[in-house]
Length: 445
Image 1 (cartoon, rainbow, N blue to C red):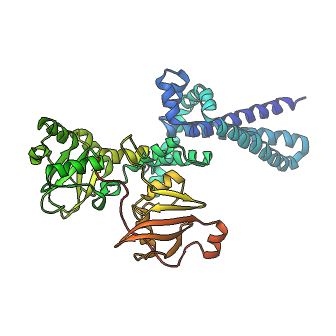
Image 2: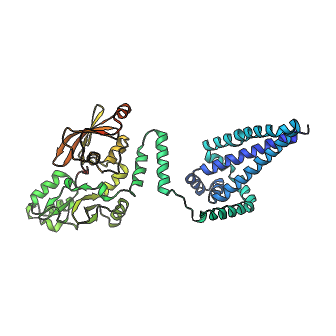
Image 3: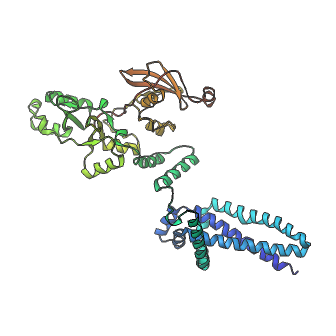
């Protein structure tokens, strides 16, 4: 009968151990974004929890102090109980029994529950943990000071320590975690990826290459210029004089049609030069997020892209940047681009199709840091410009060159390889070739 107080004490201490262990896991695993949102809506427990999460060192220190106190005290009481029951052999029995009890009921079980229900448990224990932090605050402060001083002697300055992951990296990791759980990439995840990628991409990555620009020679007759504008259906066109690198302005289709109406149909009487808007030139290495901000600041949608020598490389529009976020934007006047065509298990792909677009649409994992287009990726891997009919195998696909114009790869057949085929070939073999860096978007907008 005298042993019951010890037994009850050990059980209570095990419950407290489970509480501290589960609280530690729940508080560290709880979503700060969700807690912050709930706190802004006035949830009192969320406000308490947010204040606890704002002082992580003190919170964790208090929880660990409480957890160690109850575990050690429970072990001491159990040892005393077993010595009374079994004599000196009770020390050994107490060690095995308490290890099993603390492991199962004080650690694994509460932490497993906390991992499965982090926010729910964290909100429940927040008020209690707030009092624990206040009660243990003096001891925790002494412990923090000892830890900092010891680490400083070892060469680590805790005061200057910062989170090694940036906000973008944490958000990217969250997106990847959601993608793995869903086993597929939804449009929302594509858009979030696109927003984050704006920090890593440059204007040169999304521009319409000069070989695909639809531009106008100012020396052509106004009637010919009107036919050209109507034939291609874009809103703005770079206008050049003598050679395509000498851009003298931008012609807006609306201004041309207004001038045509004012001339009462006498199109050749229109002075095209008087209709030109100033051309805006931007470097090809301009970060994409900076270019987006510049578009919004200048209230314009169109810029000419130049390299470090001032040579025209292409053009970029606000729509090009937005498509990096939301995907292809098509209206009733856009022509369907036959970039990808399915043939059984193979894909017939325009060489200028961006690798990034293929990954986003088909869920592939082709490297995006080697080249902008699929033709450029083939050239990068083969280290040569392939001939029509040559094939190359890499990154889980078999590439066959179907079309080439001068030094530009125009069409490629891609066929995914089975894992067994990749293993037989060693994962990276080739029998021939590669493509080149051309961007796949039609000219001006």
